[in-house]
Amino acid sequence: MRVLVIEDEPKIGAALKRGLEQEGYAVDLIVDSDAGLRYLLTEPYDVALIDRMLPGSMDGVEICRAARKKGNSTPVIMLTAKSAIHDRIEGLDAGADDYLPKPFAFEEVVARIRAVLRRPQVVQGEILTCRDLEMDPANHLVRRAGKELTLSTTEYSLLEYLLRRSPHVASKDDIIAHVWDFDADVLPNTVEVYIGYLRSKIDKTFSPALIHTVRGVGYSLH
Ligand code: CA
Image 1: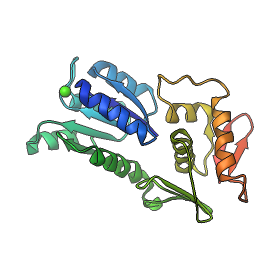
Image 2: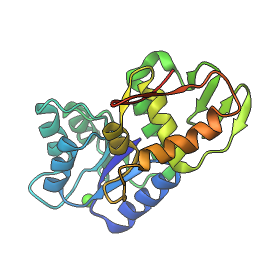
Image 3: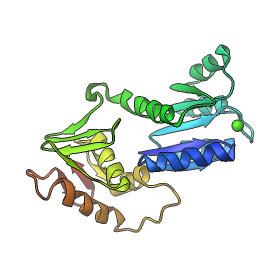
């Protein structure tokens, strides 16, 4: 899953990027409000964390309002040093899905992200499943037929994206956009290589195979 972080405080921004990457997210960190809005509108993020006070022509609430006005529905969590109730309400009224008052614990950031990612798929609950494959995002566990599997962070992120899209087909471009950040060197065959790694872990010694290649389109998990 790909996360946009718009945060101008270098320490907080770097800590969020590093921590979320360790959790398997692809993270783009932007420090300026105008560039932040541009990225939010043009890249397919799964969630955005937006600081309230930012350099540039807008604050975080205005970014959120502008994005919603353009029909962008990316889940937004506002990061705010202001804890007054009217500031929180203003953020939520502008279309933010949640807010986190600073200072916050990293674990809480991760929990809020999981919560907003869960919301559109109410029926899915906390465990993502496909046949006998299960992913427990809260505990970072993947099992097939009850057997726990060890995945790298990229394999995990790829599998999470395919599970959330399932049974729909994910194109290579969709996969690149949601699993890798914009600094990553993604070669034309990178997706195939990682699909291969993932198959060797979740499909090779199990049946039926869950990852299906849809020739000329992409991949689907079902
Ligand atoms: Ca700030």
